[in-house]
Length: 321
Image (cartoon, rainbow, N blue to C red; front, side):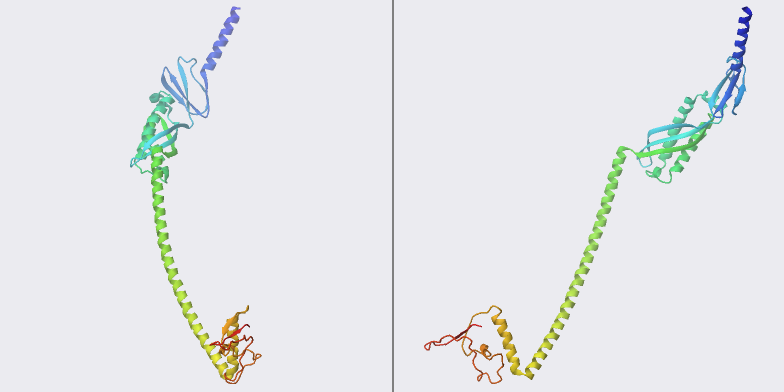
């Protein structure tokens, strides 16, 4: 039994010594081996390594060998001119010197990130403070990120940290500045609209005046041409009537009388009170034939002759067509 106990103890000690002296470093890690608290060696390549058994003599600290990220959000920054932004940004960093990281930051990422937070805040304030209101929303944004990275990189290199990149995720106006900006943009748009409206009204009045003048000129030209054509027509009409009168004066008088009957009596008829020897009824009763003789020799047309009282001072004839 004693031998078995001793053998088991030896095996257990051997296993403990074996496992406590072996450690593995993968491709995403680095190892710092310290002996009695002082840095003895550093392993940056992945693989299987050995150390003095037990943690009393040598200890192994595994640190990251990959890109790490630190975020900062809802940060209020003042730009040149007194305006304010709300900014969200982040940076990526890597531990490139484990020895400095162990000596100056005690190998603690929380210490490093505390220092990063202070430097990152100061760098962003400095970069934004040198620029105008719209710079972060323009093509200057990449340059601002590079400047912020360079400002942080120098200080963090003392801790064995390399700042790989700085990115600005969001840049928004604060609520107060947003309202002021909206009111200013609204006033600018209203002023621009009023200017365009005034220019449009001016142009409309100018075009309306030109159109009115052209309308007056067109109407005047049309009236002048109409008067000329009307005069020419009247002249031609007069020549035609004159020629017709010269060719057959009796027929011309007959035709004019028929036109006068049609105009005076109308389609529905009318009642006229005239003297029997009125010149108006000269062609009544002529059976449609014009009278060539003198007007006195022409028979009086009496379609309807009412009785005439002899004692009447002025006998009249009532004719109904």
